[in-house]
Length: 137
Image 1 (tube, rainbow, N blue to C red):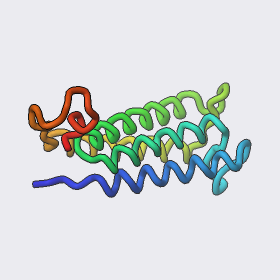
Image 2: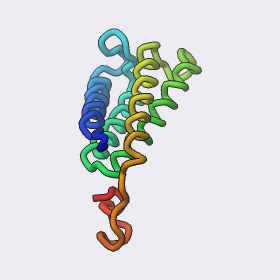
Image 3: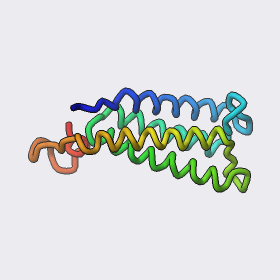
């Protein structure tokens, strides 16, 4: 059975890029009346979205790695948001925390579903230290 996770990864990455761009254009405000829109938060969303779009486009082990890394980062952001809501520079709303934890759960499930089934590249297929050799292309 082949598990296809490239499209969901691209959709989630595109969503995070969109939220990051909207956050850059509305610093100090809230997005849609629910989400925090400060500059550090926007840049983190842009970085997370970029990792997901690149990983989703590359596929193979790169896609799996992007899903697991982004899931771990989103989970850390959601956990920190629950612990530190309203304290210091990290101002997250309940909607932010639900979004981050929900995204983390989805990305970790997608990443673990593909981690078992992603074959490594054949030895000698690519030169040493090439991205394609890691990605399994």
